[in-house]
Image 1: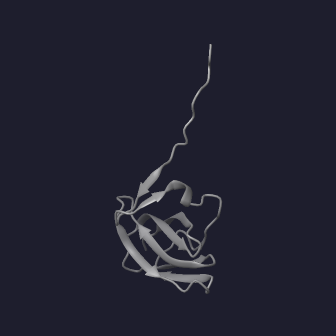
Image 2: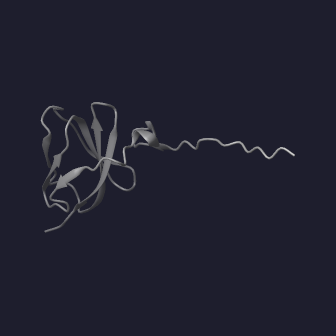
Length: 109
């Protein structure tokens, strides 16, 4: 009796607000994103090297903020006074193709 089992690799895709599919393996969970002032009121700082762009997405999947960055800087100030209070996902696009995510919280006064 042959009891050979076949295994398949499960691949998870995420669909971004702009319709782009991202392989879940491209999302780096091992790297820690440093965000200073989280929760924040008006602004916060990202301490991460080689970042091309950031996006802020609400939990409905809507893109609420986006900005291209100078990848050589290493520390970036994000100023968002117009953003409503609540919880968001900060998505960082790195030069090497990795995508990092972190939950951020905007507080009210």
